[in-house]
Image (cartoon, rainbow, N blue to C red; front, side):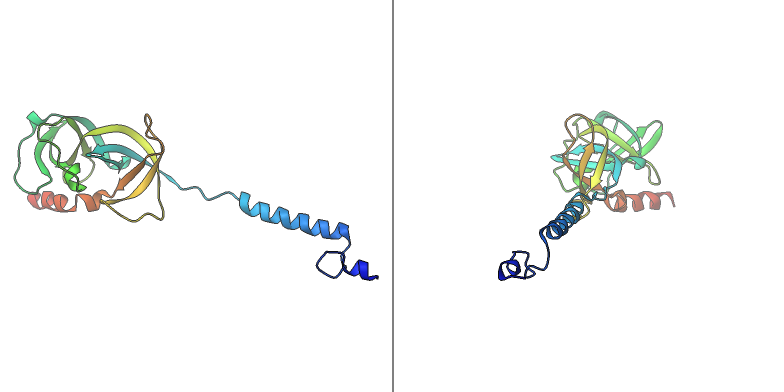
Amino acid sequence: MTRADASGGDGLGGLLDDARARAILAARTRRLAERRTAPEPETPLEDVLLCQAGAGLHALPLAAVERVTPFEPRRLTPAAGRPALLGLASVEGRLRRVLDLSRLTGAAPAAPDAPGFLVALRGAGNLALRVDAAPGAARVARELAGDAFEGGVRGLVAEGPGDLAGRTVTLLHLDDLVADHLSAALGARA
């Protein structure tokens, strides 16, 4: 081996021939490329009902929604009690406590005679939420690193009505959001 062979540039004092060095580099390049192209685990999509309350766009679990109907303020029976409680309304012949979603999420309350929608919720308590708008059902990806805020966590609309795809929403946790009102409703029955 000559001094020129020893300084062949392979980093090993010329112990590898050019073909072997190229094969090692090609294999290493493939391994690095495979790491980048490995499929990312998909974030599961959740079926939700999108609701506008004040300036916020919120998402309610679709399984928790029984029905959406137009809100008719003139048919609302006022009820004293908690600040978010607007009153009582009949939805499909069933009396429900109507809560203002704007107040529940910390936004400015809606005007008492403002049009909107009632979102009747499934389960105990006969509760309904008054919202400004209910654009429709959507599929949302939860932000896994997001912190809880405004009664929920952030999500991103993956599939939805109109131009809402790509918008950030608040995924609401209903149990936390209506806990005080649910316990009051259940206590009234006892």
